[in-house]
Image 1 (cartoon, rainbow, N blue to C red):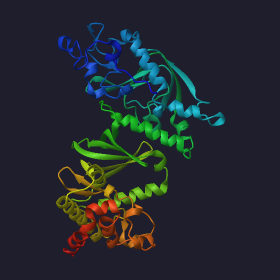
Image 2: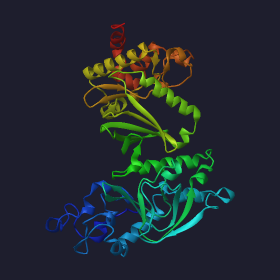
Image 3: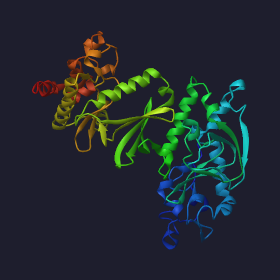
Length: 437
């Protein structure tokens, strides 16, 4: 049974959390209410990162900023409890877990040097290029982003974590300052040593995906979340080959979706070529019922696809939730889907993976056809047996080439669960396409 990670107010019993027994009299403690810290050390708000928050209430006193109260916090049992727990838990993103699993001659730790930093030492400097990162062997540190002349504590790193990761991926200047909270022992790993790790090791690259995903899933003001002209915020989806974030275009503040390809997948040159082809195809399609792709960025040893951000749910999700869709809505969704398929076909493009999971219904009722990963030009159809099998037209199963009719078949005829919604509406599908041709 996994032990629950408690927050500072639960440990201290101060009653200063929202709705707590002492909050009406003394006010709510910032550590219990600052949502921008939520998730750090797996806590609620700043509940497991309280030493970084200015103006906290502790021992009946209002404290100053993190640098003012550093010594006092380091004497706190809660601080040491969190540091100990973070050193042994959250192994999904612990670099030490990965490198220690390599044995003998393969261990990258074998030739790495050790450095020691005293409590309070700043050993990574924002905007300074170092070319090396640190794997913490003992101790903990705090990550500080300098913005508009102020230091913002944004994260905490403990035993097994990697610090200054950007030095390994891009060689660019550091994106934040890092200070030792306690005395630290750390292995030094240089970019050249990191690049010598075989790219054929799928365990490493799957692991790196989790590190990058974890760093981007932050709400603090940190440049670790920037991908070219875009800023990643919350993770909104995970799949077998990608992780999807909600984000914004920094200059325009426009919402976007950012699909990060998992590292071990991005190493596959054939897959990368397929992604580039997908982006090229969608860039040719300008239709209200087809998702838009804005950009493709290669960074952090992987690929990011910047897409239109959609708020809604797929037809599949609607089926699973409501069991059926009332006829007038079903007809509306069907006609919009047909318009997208017809438009793409007029551009000599076949989607080849029409199924309820790839038809999104936005909150305003607009339909969007998504996921053109299997799309191809009509003249280039490779006749491969691909797509969701329950939706394949009989001629495709026989090995014949895809065509407009096979697209319509996937939309309106199969399987039985989809028939309940669209199966008796095939007339509308063929009519809505034929009426404009």
